[in-house]
Image 1 (cartoon, rainbow, N blue to C red):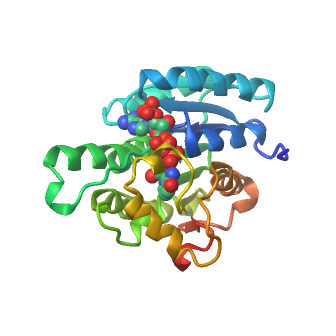
Image 2 (tube, rainbow, N blue to C red):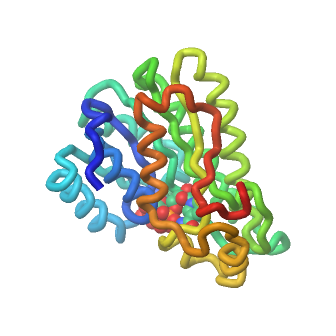
Length: 256
Ligand SMILES: NC(=O)c1ccc[n+]([C@@H]2O[C@H](COP(=O)([O-])OP(=O)(O)OC[C@H]3O[C@@H](n4cnc5c(N)ncnc54)[C@H](OP(=O)(O)O)[C@@H]3O)[C@@H](O)[C@H]2O)c1
C-alpha cells in the first residue's frame, strides 16, 4: 500500500524489527517518510535487517540504520539512542517498543532465570528505552507505542509469564501517558491477537487453536501489516487526541 508521507522529517526507533510485526512496522513508518533505527539481537537477524534497510531505501525512499544489541542488557537502550542521534540528529519523534519473547511454560515450570529473562526483555527494556529516549523526544508531538498482546488480558494455559509481561506493559502505557500527556506526547499500546510470525510458531498449538476457535468475527491469523497500519496511524500527528489506549487488533477476537 502507498502511504501518504505524513512522517517526513521524523525519526523512529523500532525494536525487534528484523522480522515479523517489527519489520512490518519499520517499513510502514519509513513508507510514511520517517527515518528508522531498527534493532535485533541475534547474528541470524543481520541479513534480514540489511535486506530491510535496502527495501526501505529503494521502495520506501527513506533511510534506516540497524543496531544489534540484546535488550536484556541494561546498556542496550543507550547504545540504540546514541546510534540514532549520530545517524539522524538530536531529535527522536517515535519509539515503538516491539521486541519481545514468549515461551510455553506452566506456572510450576517458570524458573527465576526464565522470569528474569522474559521480564527484562518485555518490560524492563521498554522502560529503559523510554528513559534513554526522553531527553531527545521532540515535543509536543512525541509518540510512544508499545506492542502488547490480547494475551495480557486473557488467561491461556502455559503463557502466564508472557501474559504478565504484557499486562505490565499496558500498565506502563497508561501511566506514561498520564506522565507525558500534559505536553502533548501520546502513549498508546497495540494489542495484537494471533499474527503469522516466528513467535506464533513457538507457542504450543493446543494454546493457539482455542484462540482461533474463540475468534468470533474473523477466523484467521492476522498479518504483520495489519498491526503496522495501526501503529502508523498512532505515530502520525493526526492521532493527537488518542492517548493512554491499548487498542486490540485481533480480528474481533474475544471482544478485547
Ligand atoms: N505474533 C503474534 O501472534 C503476536 C500476538 C500478540 C502480540 N505479539 C507481540 O508483537 C511483537 C512482535 O512479535 P513477533 O510475532 O513479530 O515476534 P518475532 O517474530 O519473534 O520477532 C521478535 C523480534 O524481536 C527481536 N528480539 C527478541 N529478543 C530480543 C532481545 N533480547 N533483544 C533485542 N531484540 C530481540 C527479534 O530479533 P532477534 O531474534 O535477532 O533478537 C525479532 O526481531 C511482540 O511484542 C509480541 O509480544 C505478537
